[in-house]
Length: 147
Image (cartoon, rainbow, N blue to C red):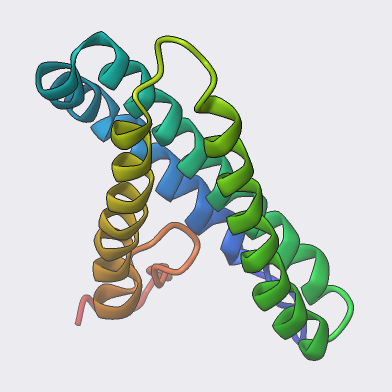
C-alpha cells in the first residue's frame, strides 16, 4: 500500500497485529508447558497472560497512531505515558486476579514478562535486520531488478 507524498502510514498497527499473531502461534506451546509445570491453574494463568500481552501490544499501537495524528511531541508523551498507564493496568489486573480461584499468579506474571520480551525480540529480528515486518518490508516494483 503506497501513500501519497508527505503522508505516512500507521505501521505500528501492522507491527502490533503481527506481534498478536505471533502470540497466538506460540500460545499452545506456552499453555502446555505452563500446564505441565504448574498444573491446570498454571495453564489458565498462562492463557490469560498471553491474552493480556496481545491486547497490550494492540492498545499501544492504537495510542501511538492516535498521537501521531497530532504531533511528534504527542507521540513521545503517548509512548511514555501510555507505557506507564498500561503497566499500571496490567499490575491492577494481576492484583485483581490474585483473589480469583483457578489462576496461578506466578505462571501469569512469568508469562507476561517472558512473552513480552520474547515477542519483541522475535519481531526485532524482522524490523531492524530485514525490514520484513508487515508494512515495513520493501515492495518489489514491476521492472525493478532483483538485486
